[in-house]
Amino acid sequence: MIIRKLYRFEASHIVRNCSSDRCKYSVHGHSFRCELLLTADRLDRGQMVYDFGLLKGGVKDFLDGFDHAALFWDREAPGYVKAMKENSKRWVSLPVSPTAEQISRVIFLAVSAILENTEKVNGDDTARVHSVILHETETGYAQCFRSDAYDAALGKIDLKNVVFSDEVKAGWSDPGMWGKLLKGVRFKNPKIAMQID
Ligand SMILES: [Zn+2]
Image (cartoon, rainbow, N blue to C red; front, side, top):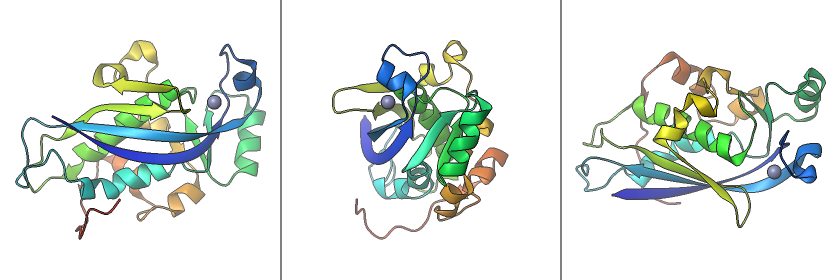
């Protein structure tokens, strides 16, 4: 069984080496929609794959990190990176080009790491990411499955090389979340009252 949680974020990027001149020569933005699909070997005590309410903690914060942010490849020319950092308080530096394909891989790996590092107390310990569908436009999306996320042929992604600006981190409920995740610190899910949005 699969469950889906939908997230949204607005972000800018530039895509080098692609076929479209508009994408490779101009910084532009998209209203991204991210479908997070989860699966599990069994249902938890609440007879769910994973309580939607639990996806409002670190996972929601992580995805909100991309919102109104400049997304750029860390192999861009130094002048471009410098300009982005100087002119946008919110930015995310990525070890891969910020295409829908690669961002979906980053999201797969990061959400997997967050779930793996979260203490499960309700029989939901087998819950895991099934895939990530990242819509870049109304008509186009990329879908990352587990095999894609870890496929070195698609470009190795080490989450240590995904860097969020201080302004992004300041917007999280725990500004130290990303650093803790990279160090393998265990997370506890917050108490949830209701499953609203
Ligand atoms: Zn684009």
